[in-house]
Image (cartoon, rainbow, N blue to C red; front, side, top):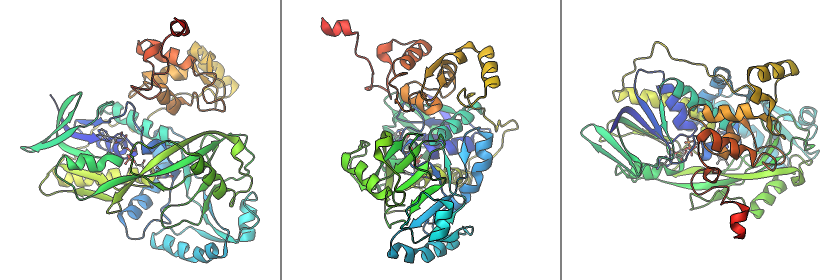
Length: 482
Ligand SMILES: Cc1cc2nc3c(=O)[nH]c(=O)nc-3n(C[C@H](O)[C@H](O)[C@H](O)COP(=O)(O)OP(=O)(O)OC[C@H]3O[C@@H](n4cnc5c(N)ncnc54)[C@H](O)[C@@H]3O)c2cc1C
C-alpha cells in the first residue's frame, strides 16, 4: 500500500492549487479524483472570471480569500505561462431600483477593502462601453475584475505540481475514508492509499467525503448555471465584463469576452438536488438571452456555437468552511467554496497549508522548487517566422488538425504526453482547444481520436469523450449492417 504525507481528494481548482503549494515542500503528496482528468467538475464550467471580491459578504472568510487571491494572478499566470487579462468590469444599472443600489455596492466594496471602484454616470458608462443599452442609468467601473482560461489554470497547476513530485491518480473515486492510529486510509475500488494528512477538496461531494469520518453537520447541493458561448465573430462590441446589479442569490447574468476571443453569456441560478444534472435546458438558455440583452442589446443567440452548464457547490449552513477537527488530527475540510472558488483557490491553498502546518505537517521547503511551467507552443498565435521554426523543429506542427482553432498535431500529441496528460477528447479540448471552435469538432472530431488511439496505444473504439461510458465509436459501419 502506498504511504503519503498528504492525500488531497479532488483535483479541481482548490485541490490543484493546494497541491502546487504543497509541492514546494519536501513531502510526498498525492491528489485523487473520481473523474479521468483534472478540473473536470465545477472548475471547468464557470464564468472564468477572477473576481476582486467587491461584492463578497464583508468580514467573511470568502471575502478575505477572494480579496487576497486576486493580486496573486499576475505573477502566477506568468510563472505558469497561461493567458490572463485584466479587462475590468462595468456593472450596469438599468432600472431606478438598480441605480439606487449603486451606493450600497460601492460601500460593500470599501468594506471588503476593494477601493478602486469608480461610480459612473450613464454618459460615462456609454463612453467606456458604447454597446451597452442606451437605457443605462449609471454604473460602476471595477478595474481589476479579470478573465482567465479556467481549464488551463487547473491543468497548469497540476502540471507544475507534477513537475515538483506530486502524484495524480485520476479515475480514482474515494469510496471510504477511515482514521486509525494517526493515519488515514483512503479507499477506492481501484485500491487503497495511506496518508498522515487528508484534504477534502471534493467540491459538490465534500459532504460525502466528510461523512465517511462521521462529520454530518452540513450538506452540499448543486445550483446549476447554464451558459451560451458565442462565436468570435458575434457583433457584441463590448471590451469589458458587463455585469448586472447582483441579486441576493447570484451575481446575475453577465456578458463577457473570453480569454480566447469568444463571448460568454450566462449563467442561470437553479437550485437542484441531482449532483449530476449538468445538462442545459431550453428554458435556461432563453432566460440567459432575455437577461443579457437588457444590458447589451447586440447579444444574439444565433451566434451561439455551444452551451454548457456547471454546478455551484452550495453548502448548508452556507459560507466558506475551511475546517480542522480536534478528534481528527490531520484532516482538513474545504467546503462551501460556491461561486468564487476559481479566484479564491490560490488564497485557500495558502490558508489550507497554514492549517496543515498547525496540525504538524513539516514546513521544510525544497531547495529546488521549479516555479515555472511552459505552455505548449501555440501555432495559432505564432507569426509566420515562429511557425516555420516550429515546423522545422517538429514537422507535426505542419499538420493542422482543428481548422477552426488552427490546432496542429504536434500540440495534440504534447497535450497527451504531458503529465497529467489528456486521455480523452475533452482533455485535448481543454489543453489545446481542438474541437472548441465554430464547428465544435465537426472537422477534427474523427482525426483527434485517431491521434489519441495511436498515442495511448488503445483501439479507436476505446477512445472516449470523457471517460468510460462515453466511447465515441461502437464499431464499423459494415458491422452495423451485418
Ligand atoms: C455557473 C458557475 C459560475 C461560476 N463562476 C465563477 C467565476 O467566474 N469566478 C470564480 O472565481 N468562481 C466561479 N465559480 C465557482 C467555481 O467554479 C468553484 O467555486 C470552484 O470551481 C470550486 O473548485 P473546487 O476545486 O472546490 O471544486 P471542483 O472543481 O468541483 O472539484 C472537486 C473535485 O472533487 C472530485 N471528487 C468529488 N468526489 C470525489 C470522490 N469521492 N473521490 C475522488 N474525487 C472526488 C470531483 O471529481 C472534482 O474534480 C462558478 C461556478 C459555477 C458553477
